[in-house]
Structures are given as C-alpha cells and as structure tokens.
Image: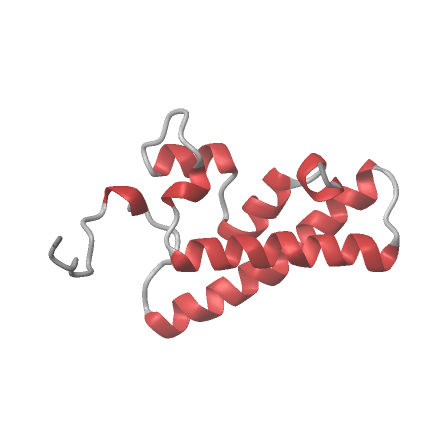
Length: 114
C-alpha cells in the first residue's frame, strides 16, 4: 500500500470533490460497492489527478510524518479540485453527481451475435 493510500484518501477526495469517499458513496446510493466502479470518466480523471499529484508531491519532497503527508494529500487534492472547478464553470454543471455509472443504460450499439 502506498503512502497516498495510507495517509490521505479522505483528504484528497475532500479537496478534489468537496466530499469524503463515504459521503460520495452515500450521494451515489452505494453500500458496499467500490466507489470507483460507479464513477463516470470525469470523476475518475479528477480522482486520478488528485492521487497522482499527491504521490508526486510525496516523492519530490520526500515527505515524512503524518502531518506532512496529510498536507501533501490536501495539496494534491487541491490541484485536482481547482481543475474540476474550472471545468464545471465552463460547462455550467457539476462533475460530482449522484449518477451511478454502472446503472446507466449502455449508450453503444452492440453487434448482432452470429
């Protein structure tokens, strides 16, 4: 398990999306399911940006100690959160939604079986 996973998942999520992973799961109506499995493309992209930014900050600054790791997690989440807010402003809608990606009907046509 990486330092990012150990120290800061909630901090990254809060800074990126304004909600903790638990709050995000509640928003999507999930119980025990994996939150990532129910995110759409933008949610996944911003989640990954926050995590990857945090990991790179940890590595670059050789972060040690709980306080520094939490601070790095907030900084990485802020990077993703700022990008999310810019996109939302431009689109005029929120990226954070209660929509459950796996429950949406398929938008692609399937080839007939032979």
